Every structure is written in structure tokens, then in C-alpha cells.
Length: 360
Image (cartoon, rainbow, N blue to C red):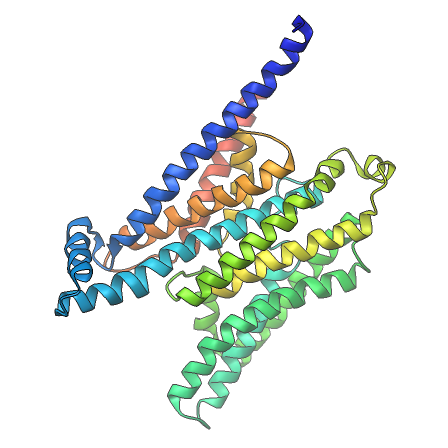
């Protein structure tokens, strides 16, 4: 092998080693986070008590402790912990798609009106449930509110992105698409505020949705998100070459024979799917989709096929850690997970900005 070939291969070997190291580290952190989620409950981090409950559950002796363990571990903590990881993965994937689509490291999954659309739909359901509460039983109203919130948030996220595409007249121009998402977000947010002014009882539910919560994730939601995540990761990595071409500029991408309008539309639809699934289950969780791709690019850069998958794994770890901390920090009370991710993400970006300012 010539000296030139050796010099050319050295950075590639180094980058491959960095990627393997990052995957190994994230895999370990993910397993530790899943274990920590199972032993963290209303009393905080309690591994000994959880071990006793797990032993009673395994023996299946029909004791009250075994029944309690089956409920707490099997139906509450386990789906919540796994669901937090799945939501984080969806947001990390959505963030990588958004940043690649707009060639902007500050883009996040909520950029195209999905957050505003989901918020408006949730407010409409809450207001309708409040008005209908006097005409139907309280149990029926509560069931309608809970089931309706999930479906409304999912449909609202899709509707917000659909209206953005309509306002931008398709996905031909990224700048017009970006501006349409900003304008629509402001407009739908104003309509949502107007409805809460007219129906004040819906404000508390809206605040809970805006802060984000993993408390209501069940096994059916985990199955749905896992299926959606596998499908979306496969579709996204199949179009990773389009994102690589976009980093060269639109003119270069067109010269490669890409139909940018069609390809952008596919990317936007995948972004809508990832965001809609995540938002419908936990509400709005900020900064995960923004920070996850940043961390991957900072510590193990690579092409978009790697970036998309690694950002999903990074997002899973970030939200899982935030969910465990939200349960443990002030137990028996619980912090909204969206508040914790905002604080952690904001501090990270602030430190990063300070370092770059000091270096320049």
C-alpha cells in the first residue's frame, strides 16, 4: 500500500473507531437507563425494594407483594421506561431529518407546525370534553378526553405539517417551507390561546401537554412506536443519500439528477410520522430532537445514514435519562420530563456557545 493510500485511509479508520466507540457507549447507557427506570418509582431510586418485588413476582405465590409487583413493574414502570426510550429515538430521528432537510443545525422536529397543530387539536378536545361533561357521565368524559388526546395530537401534528405544505405550495423551496412553518406555528398558537381564553378549564390540560409527560405510556403505545420507529429508520436511511447531496447545495443536488421537490416531500412526511408518533404519546418534549444530532456530529461525525440511526439512539438515551431523573430528583413528587430536557438541553447549548465564542 502506498503512503498516499495509507494517509487517506487513516482518517476513515479513526472515524470508524469513533463511531464504534459511541455506539458501545450509548448501548451501555441505554441498558443502564432501562434498568434504572425499572427501579425508580414514587419513592425515588429504590433497587432493593424493587428486587424484593421482582422476586415475589417471579415466584408467583399470589401474595399481595407479587400482585403489587406485577402491576407496578409490569404495567407501569416497564412500559413507561421503554416508551421513554422509543419517544426519544423518534425525536432524535426527527431532529436529524429536520437539520439535514434545512441544512440548519438549529432545526428541530417541531419546526414545520407539528407542535402548534398538535397543541391546537389537544385544546379542542379538552374544550369539547369540558363542555360535554355536563351532558354525559364523568367516566365517559374522562375516557373521551384520554383517548381523544392521543388521536388528536397525532392528527393535529399531521394537519399542522399538511397546512405548512399547502401554504408553501409544496416542498420545492426549503426557505419557503421554513417560513410557512414559522408563520403557521404562530397562527395556530394564537388560535389555541384564544380557545383557552374562552374555555379556561382546558388550560391545565394544555399546560400538561406542553410540558410533556411519559406517565401514561402503555404496552400498546410501545408496540405502535416500536413499529413506527423501525419503519421510519428504514425509510430514512434509504434516503440518506438525498440528505448527503443536499449538504453540497441545491444546485449540486439537482445536477446529480435528484427531484428535490419529491425528495423533500418524502423527508417531510417521514418527519411528520416521527413527530406525530412522539407527540401523541407524551406531548411536547423540547431539545431532545435538537441536541441529539449535535452530540452525534460532535463526537462521531459521519454521513447521514450513520447520523440518522445514531441520532435515534442518542435521543433514546437522552430522554430515558431525563425520565429517570424526573422521577428521582424530588420523589415522591415528579418533575415534568419536558422541563428537565429543556434545562439540560439549554445548558448544553449555552456551554457549547460559550466555548465556541471563547475559541473565536
